[in-house]
Length: 481
Image 1 (cartoon, rainbow, N blue to C red):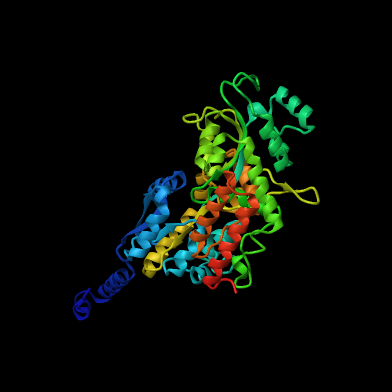
Image 2 (cartoon, rainbow, N blue to C red):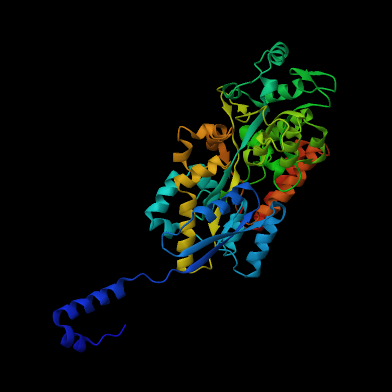
């Protein structure tokens, strides 16, 4: 803006001078034109990310005044890792945010694709407040690399835990309760409080007790087809059997290879310790009470959920995000008969039930190739997603909040049937390895677990084979001395 100051003074005196200065101030303080910025995010195609897109379309406004749009690339779960890995390897630099299983972060961090966020967190009180509010188990599992370090790479997008879904019409039936008491001298758990004392031995009793054939009495009616007592995941694909089997290992006092203590940590003698063998053996043994699919390596998280919704099982342990459909009248025959409780656990020497388990769910992370402006806008999306009102609405739509302040709201437990159990189980969660060798470790472990599940080898042989493989692989990778 060019102004002839001398002419302004000659024509209008002091009033002109005031007007000119006002114009100059107005011109210099006017905001820059708002920019159109698209934050592209890779995410699995399921309810929690679909809600995020729909809610962002309705409510998200950047505090910078820019026109920011969150655009999620929805990818089927079955090909999600491969698609993201291919994008990263290609150098196309397509995504600003990525939803990532926590096991993948080491691969993508060491590949130079995921951004360390500490300097941004240190400079931003809002991010610090969010990180303080996020449940610490989620930060440890979803964000740290090396695992359990102070290096932060992400924030929770969708936390998840395994819970127990059970048929309350059967477990609370007076006749079934009396029969169970007479047979096992135990209480058949009906309420959430009853399930707090259920260990895996009682789970086995439940599995045996509810095995019925067509024509047998079942609750207030009669079984019309083969009915089974219990099931949990025992699938060869991806991480299905590992996610349940390692809960038994942890609870028995066993461990996986400890990446946080490399290069001193060993695999042989740890992964196949007596405690680990005892835990895995218990896991395999209890599968005898499950439907025949358990011995085929195909009893994954989707199969057990389908069987439960079809009315063929009394109780299952499964991810709450997957089995949320059990209460959906559109797809579930038992939607009005389903209740949710804590998972069973292992009783320790003090008589307490320990419920150590593998963490589910995913963080979302920033990629490394973006401008500071795009990084700022991406972090603003993170702040929006982890704000209390958005997290509460997410919970009301079936998601799990990551914020302790939301989980501690009086109404939170009653929003969805699994909320109370999910919240109370977070303290028991551990995680897989985060290192880039994760995929090789998991694939071989799944193969060996499957051989034990299908009766080809013993639980001890499986763990011995796993320990030997991990020792060799991790030594060659320089992670074990």
